[in-house]
Amino acid sequence: MVRPATSFDIPRALTIYHSARQFMRRSGNTVQWVNGYPSEALLRSDVAAGRLFVMEDAGGVYAVFAFIIGDDPTYQVIDGAWLDDATPYGTLHRLGSDGTHTGVLAEAVAWAWTRCPHLRADTHEDNHPMRRCLERAGFAYTGTIRVADGTPRRAYERI
Image (tube, rainbow, N blue to C red; front, side, top):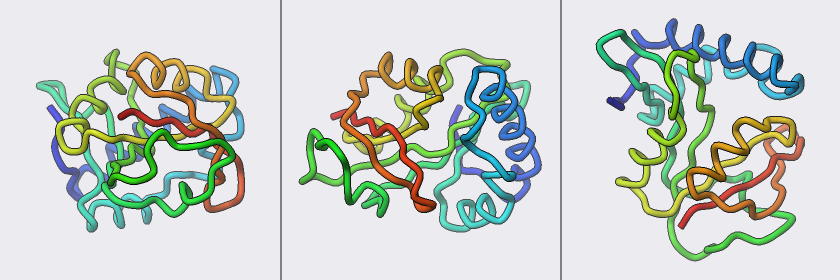
């Protein structure tokens, strides 16, 4: 089940993001989500804005992600081309899992799709597991964008 995160979920979300960073490092991605990103302050901001969500079952919260409907400033410029640059879209950001469940991205995409049938996402070049998951979930690679700190990310879109 997906539900909006509350401030009570933040400690668990931070633990999940720590697990996700460890998985990235084991998978060869040493440069994404460094220096404690995503931070507690960012998560608190996401909760306050209603854009942080958790996945839970009877065992508790096992994944967390941000979902934002509306223009993402980092998607304004792309080295490539969006499939659809005219209709509103929702963006999946900062998906992290504790590793106890499979199909977490597919679950997030299915949930987000019911809210906005035009989705975008991005990931680091070295995040091969996420790249494969995005492609399996029906996303097409559309080019390269740059995030706020100027580093490149592979951009994906599903319409």
